[in-house]
Image (cartoon, rainbow, N blue to C red):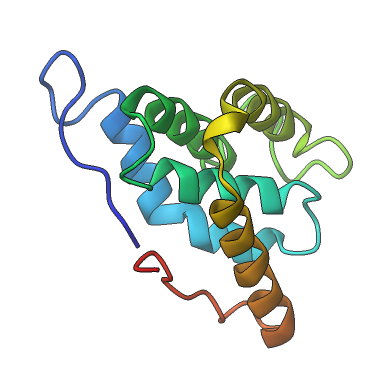
Length: 136
């Protein structure tokens, strides 16, 4: 899985966008597995992930997408994810706003990779099919 590197504007390696990158690196695929079939925007979240980790994506877009993805991944947010019917509403809103703003940077390749990983996960049925196709 690709990792983001560098520091935030203050030069502190443990704050800002780095925290978001760390949260995404540590929890994204686990969250995808746990929410498969329950979150209607999972394809958009995965495409945004691939865009955020694509070295061709401008840095400011990477930072914003990682922030939105981190909000999805981190369990403590405005509406806890375990609240049926509402739990992912805030996550969807944050992701939709950021993805809407940077939609032109999410390529057909990012979307195709997202569909492929979702297909693999659904076929596996147990959520153990995540693959790191970041090399493609």
